[in-house]
Image (tube, rainbow, N blue to C red; front, side, top):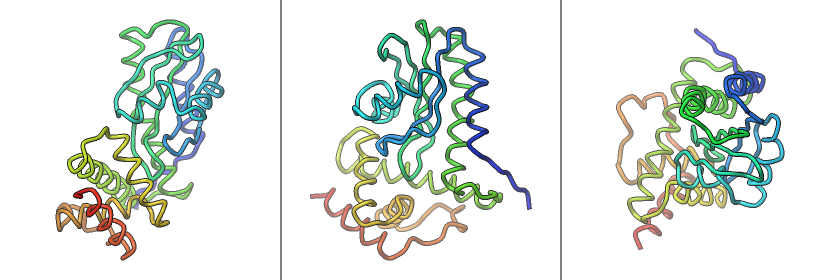
Length: 222
């Protein structure tokens, strides 16, 4: 069976490649919010990503909460923050720090590399450094799809931003000590009754996940 092995060094190489394509690049970071974890960073991103994670403010946090690309300034540098793949801890947000305002070519280069960085981070989180088989990659994609669907259900029941919906799911899973992907899958089942046709390889969530999902859905409909 085909195997693909990813590691933190892949993220570093992708980030170094991105920085080399940008004039005036002062650093690149990859962080998770609301978990507040700095996954990887180079140059100015080492300090400036951490500043935003600690304060809960800045383009990095705004990009995560609103699930959109955000440009701004942190201290004396321009920054572009792009949210990517959602995992159990939150969206992986790619930040790029520049000594000048980002131009069209800068944004194009960031848009091209961001999916690769986010996917590499998601794979590392999912398989915890192990060799990832093709069937595991399929399940990883499916789990993230259910997280997105669960976010949509929360937003439909209680109007809020994508990041706020995700934080609500995270709190529910953490309070019950149940994996987020299990809570999300259970919520989709509780509300919709079934999963998609291509979900045969996804194991049914444990009973505890259904308990969390049912309580959450009841609370959202009050």
